[in-house]
Length: 90
Image (tube, rainbow, N blue to C red):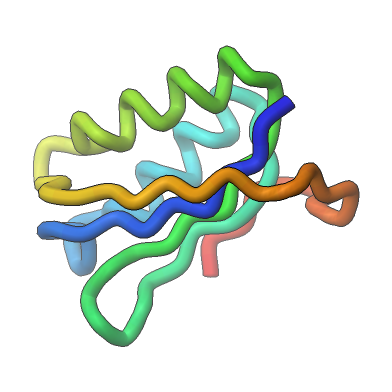
């Protein structure tokens, strides 16, 4: 089980990045949230089985849709939380 806090930079707002990230998380059965930040970045809190989280991160790095362009990602491991009921788009 992995829990990551991820900060994504690049062309990630106004291009359907959150929606694509949400759909990808649901596809992998992950929990957490994705939200836009005031500085133009997007933060993702994601938790789930190790392999699923690693595949999710790979797809986010590549850009979850053709309109997004990820230029940077900071990934910070966090302690496993039990209070994520599902994956939310905020």
